[in-house]
Image 1 (cartoon, rainbow, N blue to C red):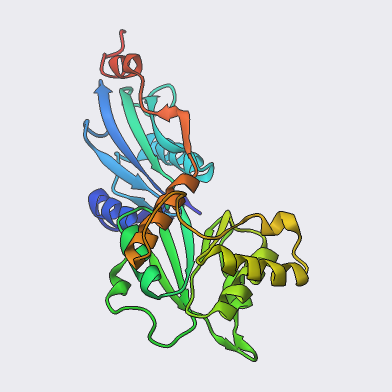
Image 2 (image 1 turned 135 degrees about the vertical axis):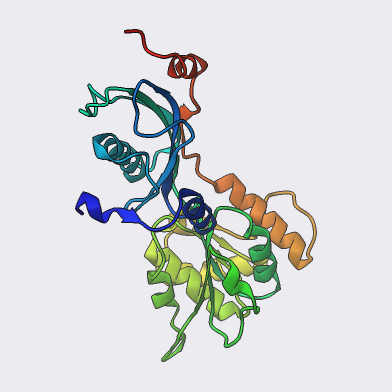
Length: 293
């Protein structure tokens, strides 16, 4: 994409708010220290996504280099913050000859994607609990009007109706639409649909985890039939049933949802690199000390 096509309308703060709400990958670049003649003052900010830039740090080769550094981190999925030094004459080839330190904070997007099958009492309670978290939720149900009103305002929630097939809900197509590495939870209104979903999810084989609501006896029945359908012990051993953090008590929908959300937290990946957990004090000290001639 040509450089001049990367600019997007809007200020950095409006873009940052929108991208945070949507849990989309982006980076915030902030000028935190300057010396000599520079394009912008400390406090200037710019938001960078894989395909757009919002606001400016002054343009020119320096800004292009900041964009390249941020996009490289986004492409590598490297969250966290790090400091970049730009001697404008040496590194950036700009005649103003000043010195700029830029703090680049990288947000890799949704921390997790949860595929939730079932919009019953527990499903609704779970969506309510997950709503404030920077997770993406793909919510499926095969019934008409299953989803509560008002959920469209949730930026990170996608409601998807499972289409009808020749022999019931077309669960295979729904499962095939899932992104790689999502965490699947099965809790529909119908045991036959639950079993068909677990069968399809195991065949899909690309989920980070798979949980099924129900009792140990329900899983024993499912396990026998799924084994007869060709799933081996190793695959069946990946299914968590009952779901929820071990030791949790309570059978109310909200209690089950709380236990399930807590269990998901134990499965959350650690994406922070040790060298991206912050800026070392000595680096910050050097950043705010003007270079010697």
